[in-house]
Length: 118
Length: 115
Image (cartoon, rainbow over all chains, first blue to last red):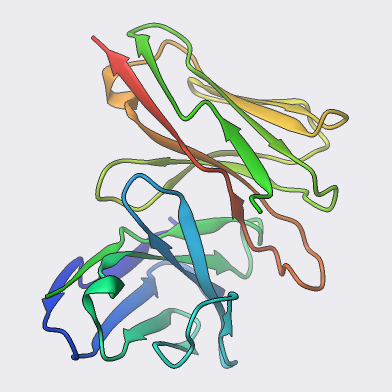
């Protein structure tokens, strides 16, 4: 149990286009989902926290108009990178935290999405 | 400012050895301490987690030792295997009005287990 999926796993796009990444909790309901960014050989950097049905809360320094987050249901959150530029190229990872049956502190991570902007 | 300090940055052990990774924290509101294992190009996978009411927890070959008074915790990998070669992250979280249980990650430790 506690499986989180992400789609797509890899995406290459041209500068100026928008890219949507989906994060799904497959076997549990997630009231809270988190979006992280990870640079090579670095730790995970939290971008934003989203609660189902509410606006996302962004970490300091993260542009909310650049990284649009929607958490429309208890099993799906999306991250849209708008007008992507090469500096947005990175590994994006989501995580989900459950509502019951397990410790509500436990975060389960998706497999990540490698975004390359040309 | 990193709220969880992790060391060493990297370590190499021979098969069968016991890599030990250490983490320290300052925030006494933290009450949940997980360890994650990450392979290149993959998302982190929860390995084992501990709460402050116990001083040690074992799951298979992985053991967490926790010292509440020193605000330190460590991961031991018993009988390490080449397949354990990965990056390990410690983390901590606690419920406060401004944290919402968000995980604070250490910088990571790259572990290489040689055959």
